[in-house]
Length: 115
Figure: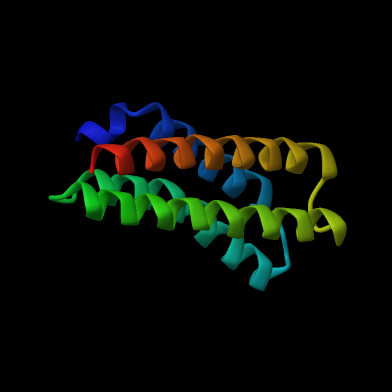
């Protein structure tokens, strides 16, 4: 698949793997479930957007991916604040989530200009 070659997909898939690893032993199952879902949603929506027929559809799924970044960021910050995860590795994930969201926003704006 072509999406597998995209740097943004690779970064977001790596982010999801890192989130899964960080939360693996977490006993707060509600938070764990929600945070894993939002992290998985980012690369999933990127790949789904890339597989769509039109640029308009692609942009829609990239917006979903960006929204999932916001969701993940919120959940990571709450997890840090409640001491549900070690602070330093979680802050690295916060940083990467913010950077991925910026890249996705740039892709959306570029695609909107080409639409």
